Length: 465
Image (cartoon, rainbow, N blue to C red; front, side):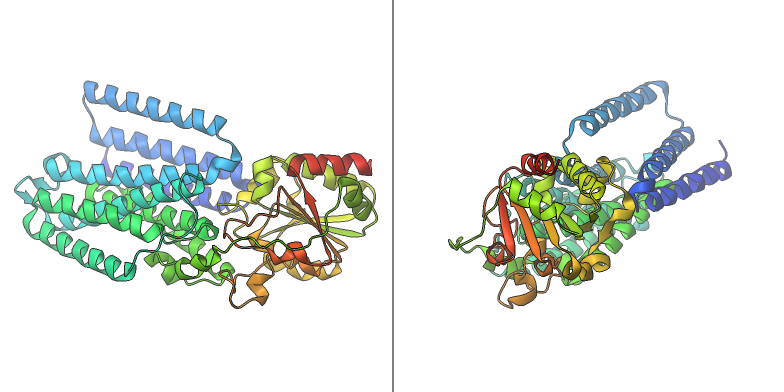
């Protein structure tokens, strides 16, 4: 295969990746976007193999690796529950980071295979590229593992704040720069592994201070890191497809992180430096204080809903845990059949992953024109008769708007408390992922519907029917 034809194929795959990102930006086109991405990746892999011209035995190992990895991926995709999707994404990010480190190590120890020189004389540009790619990859690897453990409940979602942590991080970053410079000057493998070790530690330290409520932004940030790690290694390999793909993932992840930070009134720089939510979230560990709440039943909720003219449904992580999206769609259909106006309000960080709620609602075939983002629907709550909150805790907490001492103060919320009645479905009065009480529970206009979200919604539907 000629180099020019290969460049053309890589360009085609890059265009398909761009179309994939565009398709994934909306649930109605996400399936098509996935297809574009898969076709683009198949072209990129095929072109790379044709350029490399591996021997028969090497080709067997490559095909075997693709089959094993693809088989595991297909199995996971079919069996993973939607509630575990955020930690799955974090886990995948860690694998991308690890792959970047391993490829960089392979290039260092066998530079002639990558056309970057010989063991004692590796091109300076290649040394810089592989050291940066390895550093970002190692940070992504351990950072993603910590995010996985927090999201999966195997580690506390509360921030872990080390004394003088900013000083430690700056010192590690300085050491990382020194080792990158020394590796570039000497090509000494010892310096390479020092880069990896320091970056692994730094990856842990920039994620552990981040509180659970901020995890959706962390997932997006790590997605960006994994993209830049791949792009850095792409330069080392001279692989145009890897450079373009990594740059697309890195830039799109960074843009998404910025958008989410803006939506949460947080600092984008703090996200990048690992200080996001650390100081404030630590204050959220107070004990739950017993206060009076108004509780109700499915029959009470059914009466209020069927006599309403406008109902706004607010889904959250509790809906995902209970797998209540299909019951929620049935409830909406029943209400609409009775002439009630129904719409859905989505907070940008509802759930534990960007777009989590949108995916679940799309799975239940909820019409896209009934689903609105925070900035488009927040003003509608004042005209709503009922706000039906199903497991969305921190993103509806009025303390974020009204209490300057709250650890989540300044984060835009869905103004469900402005509706005439707020029906809040939750298993208990426990705090949300941010670890603080929700002031909404104790307002006069709120009726708590304590129980499983799916069963409660199904019982409401039965009562209305």
